[in-house]
Image 1 (cartoon, rainbow, N blue to C red):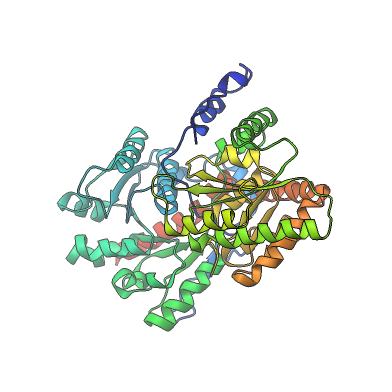
Image 2: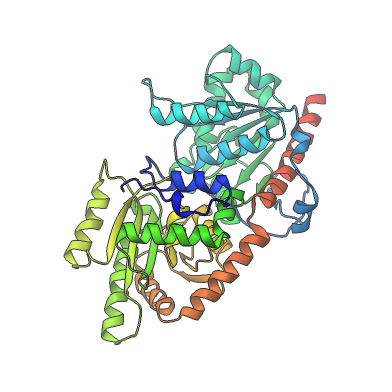
Length: 476
């Protein structure tokens, strides 16, 4: 995608963060943010873990007003030493979520140390850039091995392991000190795939202070899978969902910004004002379901012709391609589009860090992750912030965000979901009022549950609980 600059179109009185966003938004990016977001529930149960396989899974939600009454619920972390352990540093969801937490902690003057367990031997520009960004925000970046990091782990008030794979770092680096560190470890897990259930990754999981997991669906899956497959017990587990950033919400609720972004992106894509644009925004891979989406989209086009429906011209964009290294799967997608002769209806867009311009330009988001679905799916709440209806698979964390028939429509995962998705595409294409109403209700749901202030409040409840548990263990 070519570079664009539309800051001159924005009135001078608009806030400078928006100008910066617009400058960044239209640059060709090198990767795509596929963050996980988190679930919603109203349980307040904080009972202690029992010594059986019925480990409680708690939600860290509470009265939404509490997040607004307290200026910064993470203020108790001031001067605390927190060690963040990431299995890798890349522009994928897990590391970026951990970086987001690092910045929240730095905002309250916590001392934050970051280590990356797996790094290439040669300099990587993405890693270098992300490390510089962290250091600019006051995060200390430290080598993953050596006495310095062992000493830091022993002194830390809290150690956060990010993703199941990060568990390999414990034995490899801490060695005989593992037992001393485990009582202050919070393990943040995002994975849903079966190959992560290996003892070499998670053998220490039962002995940490707690696990923080992206959704109830994922938490239940881990609880059952670790018991049945590995014969180990999950620690006390907290389901936590994140919220949309203030910057994203500012753009989503700024009519001028949205209009500028919409017009610019549509012009760059050759999409006309009245075209109805469906988008799937995810890294291009079979698990994200772009192939099934395109089949459903083609089927919807056929339905509209056969039924002689009066619908706006329908277009589809697949955001998340890698123009520099086209995969076999993406080649299959492009061949399908060519075979069905819908090149004028479908476009592929390079992966990008900034999804806001595309969310402003489209009319419907399709979240089509397959198998067990998304752990949660941050793009879903971002789309809802832009008042977009969502067509999602009835799997994984998506069912914890999308209210079927209210903020969007759900369809089955797999091939059996192709026709239902096609019907849902037609359902929205033929009903402008439904699209608007669902979008508005989705926006309200985001405002009620998925803002940064909610995120900070929920995470603070987990961190307080884990810190108290760590102190109790330290006295023994």
